[in-house]
Amino acid sequence: MEALRVLIVDDEEELVTALVERLNLRGYQAHGVTAGEEALTFLGTHPCDVVLLDVKMPGLGGLEVIEEIKSRWPTLEVVLLTGHGSARDVEDGMALGAFDFLTKPVKIEDVMRVFDSAGSTDPSR
Image (cartoon, rainbow, N blue to C red; front, side, top):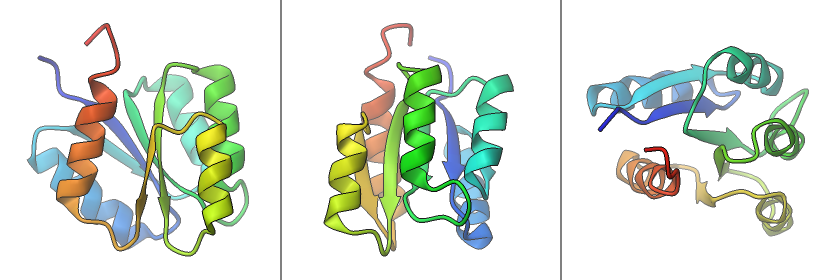
């Protein structure tokens, strides 16, 4: 089976770098960006299977990004990541079509588990 293509979107550059490195070492095709606008640009040219998306970011926030993702790529699975988001943000994100959510600080095992679950929903995989 092909490696799961994942995109990490978070304004904390150190977190993005660490997750991308660890996921690539574990056989994923992971990429990372630090802004919502960057994520949409990246997805326009690089197909992905799953996006890990921070809810609270400067500029284009996670809820705005998931809305745009689901509009342009409706089958792309999005997992929300929240550190200081409210329960309301998670509810709103789930209503917009998020597959699941994780809370910071996040463990790599939890990220892998939810990515594998989300990736298994794609019938083309």
